[in-house]
Length: 173
Image (tube, rainbow, N blue to C red):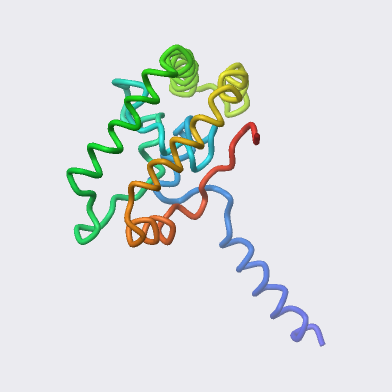
């Protein structure tokens, strides 16, 4: 009787021990440090390049949340131009808010680099909540506009290959 009970218990323990909430891949770790993705969830990817030049080895404006398209589905020059125009329009309209948010992201990144805990970094990011709430509808609109530029095949590939542990927004709207 003990053997019958012990084998499933050990097997279950081993399986649960193999599951972890800690990201194991560099991409997943990058997402945890990508504050635009933490703040806006998957739609934070639309912010790529809208916050200007960034220091450090990991961007915080959404660039780490999207896997690169394979060669067979790469963006055309026209698509790139249209997406850049959408981002430029967004950046022009929301420059003040983006600059304020960038300053908060830089402060959070610096705190993390100086050894701050996740809770301390979160406390810094929370100060950006009013900005994020103001930006949320516009960021979502930009996200959907960019998706609209993509072909059906490109969208299908991106949805099929997005990161499994995409963060949910810190401040769901």
